[in-house]
Length: 84
Image 1 (cartoon, rainbow, N blue to C red):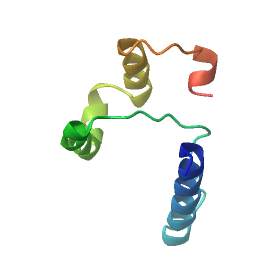
Image 2 (image 1 turned 180 degrees about the vertical axis):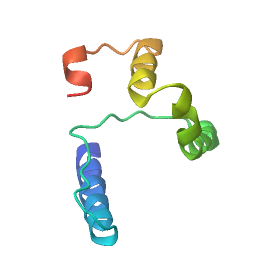
Image 3 (image 1 turned 60 degrees about the horizontal axis):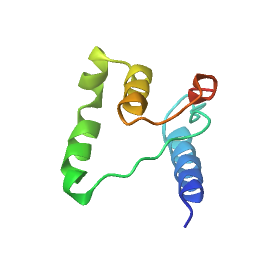
């Protein structure tokens, strides 16, 4: 399955679930996505990072962290298109 299709299915089904099970509705994912691969040996580090995101993002916003990640790994990007 193409990554874009997997992301489409994940975003649409999770939005539907959230809107059907939580009052208020109106949940929508942001437009677009980013995907990065990691080594199998790094899986637990990624799981730990996700589990600690609320604490981590007290110190640094998602946007700040994402741009820092792109720069650290020398990923070329156009700032006009990063966050929409």
